[in-house]
Length: 195
Image 1: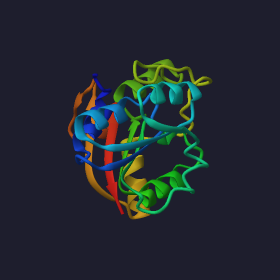
Image 2: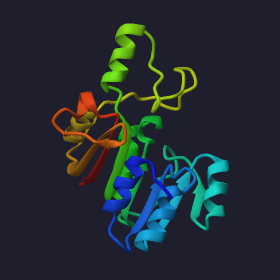
Image 3: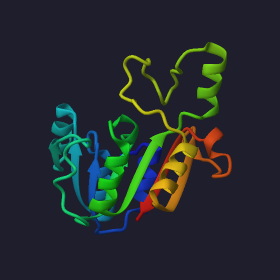
């Protein structure tokens, strides 16, 4: 199974045999890869009933739930990693969700689309409308993204909250991009965080 590029980065950096909570796990593609390739004990939380059914159909331990409301019930440090891929920008209170991630997991992976990518900027400049791109395919009125963040926004957000960045990866067209120009050149960002 071929993983989305941000998920492949996460899969490559999760320690074998770890306990993982994948929040917003979708159909469980990452969880299945972690289980099959790394011997990981993976659990998932997913909002969509159809995605929960697909993940359970893969033999995965996934429950239906909402990152905004259901993370408070998880005990402190109950997982080695808490993962939030392409989900932070869809939450109502990203700061609360991030606090829970870092409380539940000893480390946390967060990936998100970078709304400062040059194609997004160009679309706004020339078209004057919210961009629709290959990686942001929904119209403004139909997108699940309610918080549009950039790589630089996220770095500042972490600094204010005192969160340590253990690793960061940036992707453009599915390929690695330099950290130096990530805010302009990266379509996606992946951060490994620790308190």
